[in-house]
Amino acid sequence: GESVGLHLPTLSVQEGDNSIINCAYSNSASDYFIWYKQESGKGPQFIIDIRSNMDKRQGQRVTVLLNKTVKHLSLQIAATQPGDSAVYFCAERYGNKLVFGAGTILRVKS
Amino acid sequence: EAQVTQNPRYLITVTGKKLTVTCSQNMNHEYMSWYRQDPGLGLRQIYYSMNVEVTDKGDVPEGYKVSRKEKRNFPLILESPSPNQTSLYFCASSPRGGTNTEAFFGQGTRLTVV
Image 1 (cartoon, each protein chain N blue to C red):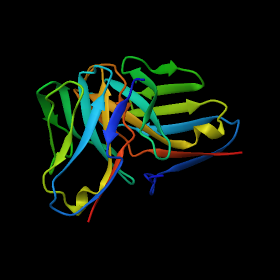
Image 2: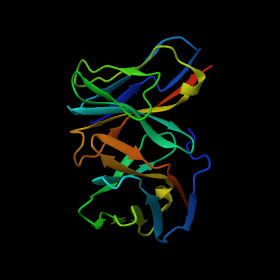
Image 3: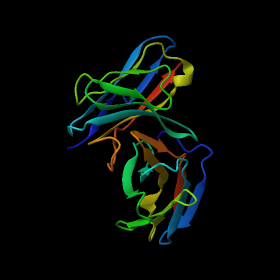
């Protein structure tokens, strides 16, 4: 599949452990944030989102935390599974634009 | 099935030969956009469209054109491709832009300009 992971930070975790992927965003005026997962050869897939008036949101096995003071976003994946292996992107929306971070590779070891 | 469809999936072309990458969505979404993805840089927005006949530049619009004559289609046009436009391209759509919506992405188009 296509390689988009050149020189990206990589997080390696053991199957069953929890994963935390971090993202620093750039614009203090951003009011909406999204995490995407991209598997090899596929387009990004929505995981979870959060508005700027919240600091935490939970989904199924995933939690997003937002710290506006330091412009930091994190994605927590509980009980990481081999199928979670992918590149993860955060994105911030301001106005009509969606701006993506460079991505983090998550590798799950069985 | 709700989807965003791009064609072609793979394309090799020569410098200067005009090409069009098509994008179609079947979800009646108003907002559509094009991104390019390069190693280590994430996705960068090229152009977006808020609705029919409404388009605007993203962060890297140079060398690209788009049109939005119908709601479902948003083609990306490279009038005179150059090697620095070799990239992986994604089309995306959302029900509305600028609000709390997720984006649905196509499968991508791998373009090589030689």
